[in-house]
Every structure is written in structure tokens, then in C-alpha cells.
Length: 208
Image (cartoon, rainbow, N blue to C red; front, side):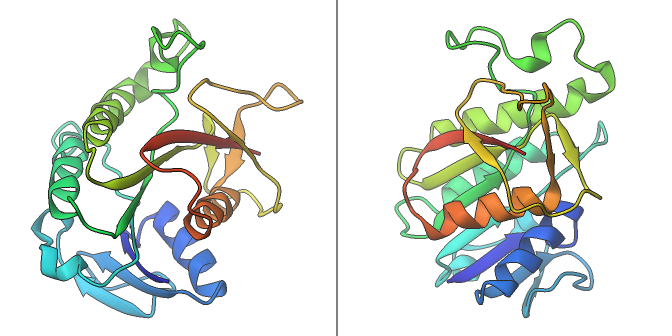
């Protein structure tokens, strides 16, 4: 596949680029500065400045963008709006590296993990911002999107075990009672989903 990875220089983006290249895919990094990922090609541009022409010909666009500061958090929604506009009615698929805070606490979907009293207050702004982005993707009925939320403990330095469990929108823990996955196992799950087009216009979650 021809894959474009937005924010390929980030920790998640680098893990995904490495996994995709190792699988033999043609990978293009969309980055604002010099490419630091394993991607073979580069589009050096701010993601919000991307055009339809930039993304033409890609089988898949992966949005691995992340912002943490008060000033940049709105870019999650801005980028969601921009990408769904660019890819409307396009065969190009869009996979989004999501967040865990918007996972539901039960099947009713009334409360999310971020609404629980023990949710870390320092992560609330990013959880809210990513949840707002998810709401925009949900409205994009003419885009082939898939949103993958990681476990609550999303470990940038963890090993690749090759083992993961896909789940739905309800927060899950493993047999150890942990909500954990490494970036490398997350990348494995994301690329498996990319290669097997079985899910569309849904949010899934993954844990180790």
C-alpha cells in the first residue's frame, strides 16, 4: 500500500512507520521538519496545509498527530475537520491514532473514562480535545475512517510482544487487570487493521 503518515516524527508515528516499512509498504512521512522516521518519502508541510492533491494516490492516510499544550489542543478538531473535508468521497482510507479517555465505561455510552473521578486531571484537556475530534470523524459519513484508541497506559518504551486484543468502545482491562499496550504493539494492531479492511466508520480499542 501507499501510506501517508501525518506526524511521522512523533513517537507513535515513528513506531507505525517502522512497522509499515518492515511489512513492505511504501510510506510517506508528513512532517514539518526533517524526517526522523523510517518512511521512504517525505511531504514537508504542516498537516493543516495539506491539499487534496497532496493526498491523491494514497491508499491510506494515518493521522498520528498529537498536541498537548493549551494553545495547540484545538488542532485535534481542526485537523479532523480538514482531513474529512479533503478525503470526502475519496477511496483513500483514514486511520486515526486516538486516545483512551473517550472510551465508554459501559455499554450505555453515557459516561466516558475521562468522566470517572479517578481520571488523572493532567490528562483531561487532551482527552477532551481528542474526544471532540472523534465526534467530527463520526459525522463523516462519506469518509472511510477508522479510529483506534489505545489502552490507558500507552507505553512509548515498551517492547513489541506481537500479542494484542482488539475491543470495542467500552474500556477494557487484560487478565492482569491492566489497561496497557506498547506503541510497537499498537502499531502492529493498526497495520493489521489497515491490511484487513473489515472495519469502517467505527472506533475500536486495543490492549496488550
